Image 1 (tube, rainbow, N blue to C red):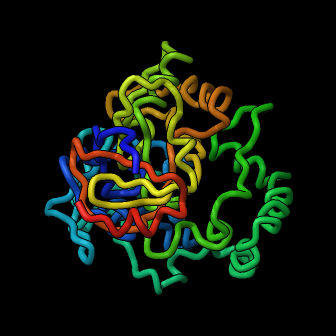
Image 2: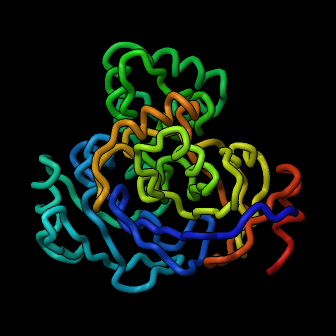
Image 3: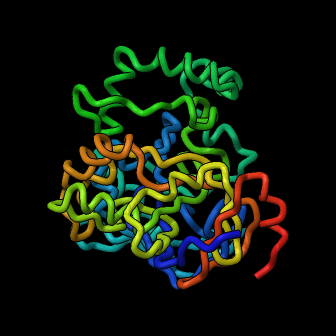
Length: 322
């Protein structure tokens, strides 16, 4: 394997769509960093698992764990609301406060077992059948053609923050589970358990739009890789390849399709639509890399990041211990 950089930052997000925690190190399991997206906000009446695509106010909240998560345990969290007030996940009032914030009745819930597929499944008629059919790329292409019309197309444009004339993302390459489930069962991720971003990509985007603040927090990676002086979106070339990040190994799955979230306000970062406009125009709508875990392990700041020749190197990459 060839070293391509070093781990500069590690991030974990205790509550889906809220601000996260910057870590010095973390254990990584098959479902990503221990405790990442351990909690989510759900409408139990409709089954919808909410996110900041449609509720950007969530990005003005932040959450921290009270104790260290484990692979089999999600601790309680303390949530800081936009007005600075703090409330805990074990408070009887937490779901009411979040409901008031979002303008709809919701419940804060920890992850449920992957076997509880009903918890994660979309309730639209035929979603289970669509999920089975969508395992095949030609079917996903056909489904995409069907949904990119009428009311659903309008909703997608709002969720992805696309302006008239801008393309919608190509959904034929995403896992078929998105047609059946709000999130992959057993997780609160949109698609994959690991999100990687490089300093090279941030430098490239800053050069293309120097007026914007390309703060890493806008893009919510798990791992920011320092790729030194290179100014190109190098992680796009990591698709299909094994990547050793410290003591764990992932497979690069696909470039991260960007929704409306990077342009929304959070913490001390103002709303900036030019961030998303630049990504759509200059980066084919993508920024970062989604990855799946091949071999669990541990990662720390400064750890080397190594790249295999191709995805067929998975077995040899996974067998090496550090």
